[in-house]
Length: 240
Image (cartoon, rainbow, N blue to C red; front, side, top):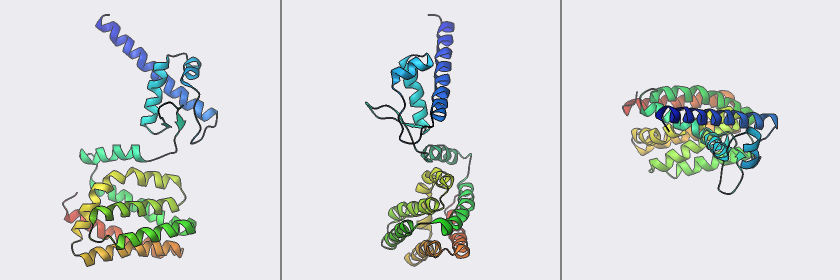
């Protein structure tokens, strides 16, 4: 096979895979499939789209990589619930390669979370308030462990977004998780004295208390104070 023939064959295979990806997406939508619903078998899909089983496998892998499908050995692919983890890889890459700055991600977070906590005051459940209180209590016991504090901090911010009852808020919050994971310990370390760290933890408690009391103004004021403090720590740590 000549080089031109190989190139033409590769282009044809790629086109078939792209068409199959689009076909599977259309199939999901026209049949009204939801998270947890399974696709037809590989053989049925291959026959439906007039392609090989290998092309179906390639298309399914592509859709799994972007979070549309979930795959496991020996089972038919199923529709995955939306999740920001795949977007998180892209955003983290953008920050690590200086296409987006850390402070720009914090600006996005502040805009997003100010609205999130406002909505959380109106829509939160008692069960969510219980989880918020448990996380804050754990944070109070972890004042000397910046890695654990960061993990708990992320869980709490995700929970505030969840309580807003708009899945897009949670999706975007999840998309910033990788950046939060490596900037968080730096920010907590920059707070310095344990007493300052405790004060910052209490801000998280005050935000959660405001959400519990459905006190929208207090929640917005406290989240603004939180981000002003955190932003200064990020700047002091040398991030731009």
